[in-house]
Length: 551
Image (tube, rainbow, N blue to C red; front, side):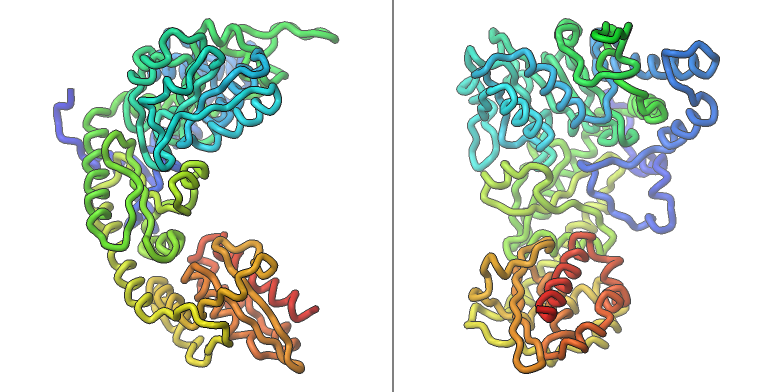
């Protein structure tokens, strides 16, 4: 039981990244993608290379013994972390994605054509694509939990489980919505069937203690970088009786007992699934992460995170112009939302200008978003080092963006017949003179107002490949001068288009070729502040212009 109130400040002080001068004001809300690392984890990497660097198991010298002892000690720690019956049930892998690929390859190799795999619409792509590949390879059938607008109805799992079901692979927590299923409810519906139940625990491990015995699953996977550990290492738990029955999925050193010219004998558990030299320094750092979490009050951490999550949902829910997709109940730390007008990526860039890190996109959950009838979403995800000040900064920044967006929308051009855009009022000096990125971003959005909606040019042949948001560009030549029409749904992309057209529209080919437009883009600081995909979009537009004038 928790004895003392949880202090996010004390917890945060253990993470060196936040102590760096450039990160003092950082609001980091991208924890569902990766969490930051405490000093103990960072130090463990260096300590391994300084004191223990050597391959494991196959050598008898002092460093090899020390390295081998470390690996097996961390395996024991991981078994305790997962409440596995034995360290033999823990396999090291590069992360949850590799673990799921291993299971899809090995489990499906013994199935018959027509056997069934049950998944859900909310799964990460890593828990969809390997099964799709295996189903195509072995003529298996994929079935999906019934859903409402993409959100699975796990209480109706029994409707798609039958005598041919051999595998049920479901999330332990959605990275897109945070939704955590009721494991007891799932376990009860699977009772009595001859199948293997897999839990994708990538989002679970950071937010609550994992007990595979209590869950009742046959396999569970997770990635260390999601729970304050290093990147490039993860865990696969499997009940010993089922791991024993699986063929290895990779061959090579470390996973063999004896090799002949025509056949080989594989090593015992768990080493038969760990071909090649493991990421040993990361295993050492994983051990430090497990010890770090063991020393924390996990109940108090979870309560703090849930309080942050409740405030996030309350705050966004009260803002006109924002659509909430997630719910705070049964949620592992994720707020999913989107502006009702404009594009989620525009809001993300605005937040980045406030030094607020969130993630925008489909979050490797495209089937979910397609079924929900939505495009990209803004995902803010919390960890125990986040504070209520972080939450309030995020909510204030979103409110400011919506106020700016509303003022721009009131004067935004409507859907009129295409006519040349009037770019004469755009002043490059005014854009360059803005003192900070937030002001420059506002000015760029105002520039986008000069680009009228042009349904006539929105044709597949005019689509510019390489833009993060859909964008269309057409060209015509009158005499020796070149003219362009541009359109996009993203206001930021419209602003970039207006910037480009202000330098090329109505110019001669030689003038366009001689203009240092990449240099201008860099000089304005756009390359530094915009995402790589947005920068690539500008260069894609520029390439289209050059292609057009060169015939």
